[in-house]
Length: 280
Image (cartoon, rainbow, N blue to C red):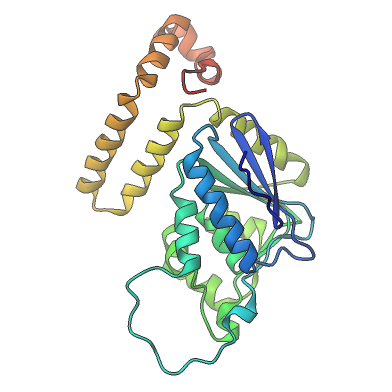
């Protein structure tokens, strides 16, 4: 666990799974301290590969994560500056989140607004509670835009037309609509959400850290032309194989009975979470 003391969230470690619990009443506002502490957390995650899965959730039932502190944007500006050559602080933060080597999962049970939505869409997966989770982009209504990756991530998740409905409409998306449009992976009844998420997180947490990281690298390469992405896929595979953990686990799977009909039909999937490994 990191040495730093956080004031905007709590950390709960369970084996290879780290839960980040936003706890900044009354609405988990994404203020300057939240930005700074999230940045420090990402530095820790890049350095500690014993964490393989990160869950983002909230301590309170009403808010998952609020928008950025509006007071940060109130200073008057004179004219339009030259086109930037580097990312803004929030863009960089959410890109760093998207590219950490761990699997990241947003567990949305309350309202996510503005930057809160952008954190959700920067995670590898997102699951939401029916009747509790609401996602809202409001920036167009106040004269700006979701400029912390929102205009770029959303079209990649849900297409141009649906993204513009979400961005320009400035309306609440409930969990079923968010699921249908691709903002979250799945919507669950409240009592079913955490059992599913915890089972998935613990399962992924048994897999090799390098395999998790390299699968993310390869999937992200799909944004390149196909031929380029395929080369990146092979390069990521070579990285994973170089650890030796893949060969060890495949040999262990063969010892358990892989490549026999009985095993492959009835035992294969369950066995995958039992292989353990040298990087545990």
